[in-house]
Every structure is written in C-alpha cells, then in structure tokens.
Image 1 (tube, rainbow, N blue to C red):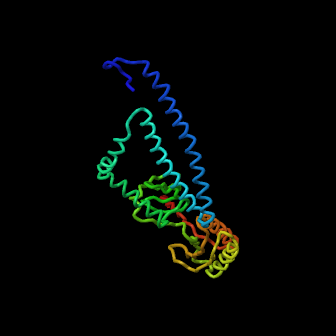
Image 2 (cartoon, helix red, strand yellow):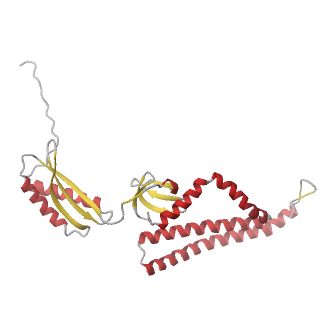
Image 3 (cartoon, rainbow, N blue to C red):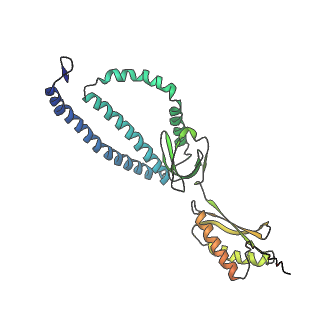
Length: 281
C-alpha cells in the first residue's frame, strides 16, 4: 500500500482506505490487549492461589510467584502486541525476526548487566532468599520486599521510599523475617536503689507479658547488663513473632517505667547544676 504517488504527491484515497482498514485492525488489537491482560492476570493469580493451597506455600511465597508470573506475562503480551501492530501497518516482520539473533548478540555484549540481573534474580527466587512481605537488608537498602522481578527487586523503606534494586547488586541478603525475632529492653536504675527489689518488680511485669500472644519465648529478666556512669542497667530479653518486636519493646518500656515509679525506684536522668557566683561576696 503506497500513500504517495509519483514521487511525493499525496494520495488522500489511499490514506482514507488505510485509516478504515488498518486503523480498525489496530483498534481491535488494542481492545483485545486491554481485555486479555486483566483476564490473564486474574487467571494466573487464581492458578497460583490454587497451587499454593495444594502445596501449602506461605503467603509471601504465593505473592512472590504471582507478581513474577504476572510480570513475565505482561512482557510477553506486550511483545506480541508490538509484533502484531508492526504487521498491521505493513512492516514485514520476517527480516526483523531473522535479524533478531544478530542484533541480540550485539546487544548482549553491551547488556551484560541485564543478563546478570536476570541470572541473579533466578537464583534469588530458586533459593527463596527473599519473598514478598519479608523484612530484609539487601543491596544497601533496609525495608519490606514488595516485588521480586526478573530484573529488579522492589524494597519499601520504613520512611515510605520505594527502592528499585537491580538484582546484580544483591550480593548478600540479610532476611529478618525467617523465624522469631528478639525483643530486648535495657532499663537503668540509680546506684542507690536495691537491685534485687528492682529485678523483682521487673520480673512481675515480664511475667504479665509472658501471656501476651506476641511473645513466643520469655520475656526474662537476665540481670545486670552493665554499670553506667550514673545507672545500673538491667536487661530484659524475649522472642516475639516476626515484625512484632518493636511494638513489644515499646510496650515493655512503658509498663516497666510505670512499675518502677509505683515501687518508688528511681530511673536516673541527666541533671544540670548551675553555679551562680556573686561578685559582691
């Protein structure tokens, strides 16, 4: 189909014909893409949910597989759409596909980082180093994993920042979401206070918290941890459900402060002494 006749002479008849036929085909392709993508996504999620239920996979693993599979499906569908659009507007895709191997080889030498991302991402998924909703430290970032992709991993920091980490930069992973976590609280009392009495008061609070469903072990009053410049530090330690340790520590500090105040045991705090010199004396 030629849009021009006799050099650059514009042929409106050809344009109108192309708009009617080619434009309609493009519209149908776009509508089909808009319909197939959400249906395919829902089908993938349902299939993975069914598989997860059969194999009793964790919720994090289920979300990881869903996001990864949907990601691959979207890339593949987009690639097919581009090929069909090129074919619709009259571009012969045969030579393009034939030359894809040569072009891919040329690009491969300059895209070693991309290949490294994909390979590293594959082993991260295979070895289950991280999963969606895990609290990790990886690639220099600390936060919650939102997505594990074939090229990048998305980590949401606790301040709300979403970090896109290339998989090749994840040389080591510290996963804080595997198993129970430690809840540690240090409480300081004055040197003039009775240590045994203070430990008894703290133990009563710890015994109450032992019934808290967030605790999996303890908490226990370990004893004197250190002797500070103005206080004797007593350590309390327990194990909690994952991601519950910070809330538990806050609640423990509050309850122990209130118990020590009620028992009349001083928790030292910095004091400032002002010396006023009277020059008339």
